[in-house]
Image 1 (cartoon, rainbow, N blue to C red):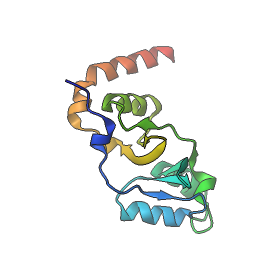
Image 2: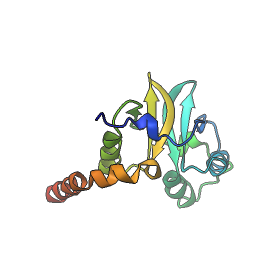
Image 3: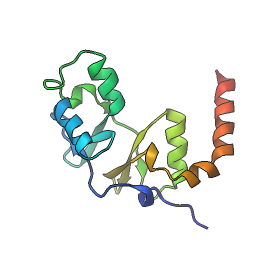
Image 4: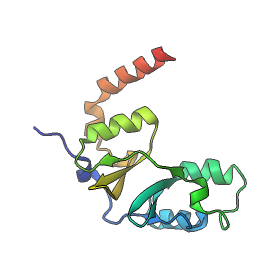
Length: 144
């Protein structure tokens, strides 16, 4: 049986995106409106960053930055990792686990088509990977 591709678990039809000039407040409102935890930052069709709930918390709120004056280009995660829409869901899980990502932009033909979030991962995929993930964590602990 072929592995399920990432494209099949994308939970929304609309890409939640902004430009580098979008203010933090505008980005947060867009994220709230779409009930999501991230916004991809595009220049034209090119992905230049991602702004997440974590960025909002650590780089804006905790840093006492003004959300009305701060542009997301100043506080986004630049050049984020991506995953191809046809890659197996298991590969998305591996990357998200290894690098502690909660949001991973999904591309097709070099264009961002969505973001896979931790909550999008089907529980069955996670259960099926329990042994592998546990082994990866044990190996990582040994390295530290």
